[in-house]
Image (tube, rainbow, N blue to C red):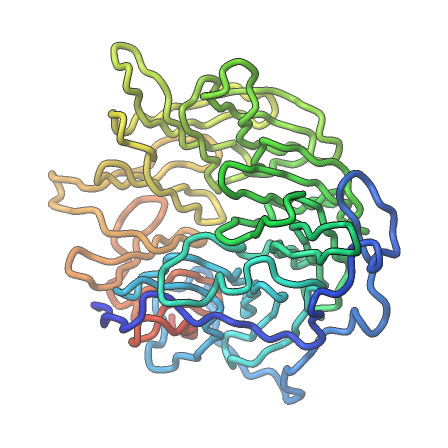
Length: 457
């Protein structure tokens, strides 16, 4: 199925959440909990914590489920808020602002977070963020912008999102930017707390093109980060109250493995041009181990918590320009478990794209080769293209619970077995970017509207 070209290159992406402040208050005026370090937390009162709810009071419609699904009903699409994603001129998703969990899409916007039933399109709740958005137009405008807030992290209890906020000047105290983290009850949207960590003391600073994200949520801590123009700040917040546990500059948190946080460390002494992976205790911020020293570039790949997976550009023997590697590390010790070699050359900055199926397989592409790996051991499971079997590699859109979803070279949606790489079906119906046992989320025929399609098989 080929996409129709869109007439716009980016979405008009605005969520309106009731009760959002124009930014007249400071973190201190909104605080009722303890203050630790540079962050503040507020536990809202009864009025502030009541989420705006528009869910229907009628009985929940029956829904067909499959785990994993392979076919979706392309004739029963439900439109979702345009703030859920951004697309390019070809209708491909460039930036994602939602997390799909079962039949609920959790969407972050500059002013707050909403939950939408993807089978009905009805809003279940809205949780506003207090304060003036630091980048109010990030999810709107005529051009593709890959910065902005990353999708919320959702657990059985909490939905947590991070955005930049502008705190207005107070007398002779100038305005400043905060990394603001909102935690809401995942089921009801009741606001549990909001924490604001100062990330800029420059009164003329703004948060345009900043990347804000929730790295992970544990029973003890919520880890969040702010990245803009070479500035990297990571903060750990108490999961129950939002009070600050620790902050670290020149550090970008990447993935959480039990009580261990693995991240990219930009402060490595005299070798300031290099980076390394530094593992910290998630609750205390104390260093546990370091790895991948003397790297030109580093990114932490979203994968199985059993392994720390990094996309590394580093020096290689007999090649001063360096090469790209996908490296698997033991999260307890930092010991290297496996190293995969990608392209070489000074202009190469990434090993490739990887997709974790949230179960047991990590699928990665490099130099036109698509390979499936056991996500807990890094053992190679399969690879495409396979000239012997006359099979080529599809383009990948998503992976979920043992199934890889993508497009054939002819542009038709296809589903593959993630463990074997074998074809499952070309009757998928849509091109999924998110999948759950209830539905797939794709882009409509106009190339810009998010659409949810119910499971058919």
